[in-house]
Length: 275
Ligand code: KIV
Ligand code: NA
Image (tube, rainbow, N blue to C red; front, side):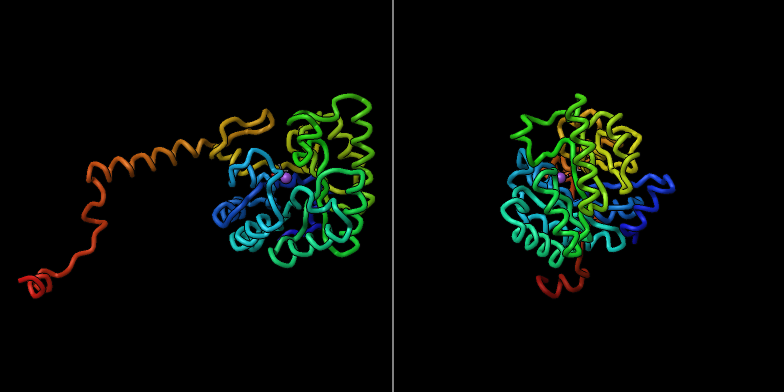
C-alpha cells in the first residue's frame, strides 16, 4: 500500500497520482484492481449513492458505514474519508472526536476537510493528534449555499491570490495533500509549483500532481449531467438498464428461468412421493 511519503515522492519524481472515489465493496474492489493510488470515500456519497441533492445531509455515521465497506473491498489501497458537513466546525474537541471515530471505526488512513480560515487550526490539531489530513480548496461543496452554487472559483486576481495563500496555510498546518476543485488551470499550476505537498485536481487542469474523479461520473452510472471537467469513460448505466429491462420482460413472458437454471428431483423419487 502506498503511504503519504510515497505521495510526496511521486510529486518529486513527477509521477501522476490517481485518486478515485468509491463508496462500497464492489466499487472499492474495482478501483483497487484498476490500480488507483488512493481511494476517496467522498461525501459525494450523499448525491451519487444516497440520492440527496447536496452533500449537506451526510453524517459521520454514513461516512463510517461506507468506509468500512470500501476498506473490505480495497485492503491494499490508501483510503481518505471526507469529514462531512459541520463535523469539524463546532469545536476543536468535536473535530478531533469525529476524526477519531472515523479513523478507529472505519479503517480510513486519512481524513479530508474543506476550506481554510478556522479550518486551518483543525488541520493543525488533527495532524498533531496523528491524523493525516487532506485539505480541499476552490469549489468546496459543503459551502454550496455560501458560494451560491457549483461554480468555478478563484477566477479573478484577488481570489486567486487568496487561494494561493490558503493553500500555503494548509501545507504549513500539516496537510499531507491538497484537493483543488474547479479552479482555473493557471492558479492550480502555480499552487502546485509553490507547494511541497501534492495537489490533486478535479477541474483544475493538467499541471497538478494528481487527478480525482467521482466513480459514478467516470462510469456514467446514475448521474444525469456531468460537469465539464469530467470525462465519462463508459456509459455503464445503459448496459445495466438493458439487463434489468430484459430480466423483467423475460419473467413476464415466462422465458426465464430456463432448464439450466432449475433444480430437479430424480424421477423415481418423485414417483415415490406422488406415485
Ligand atoms: O466528495 C467527493 O467526491 C470529493 C471529490 C470530488 C474531491 O470531495
Ligand atoms: Na467531498
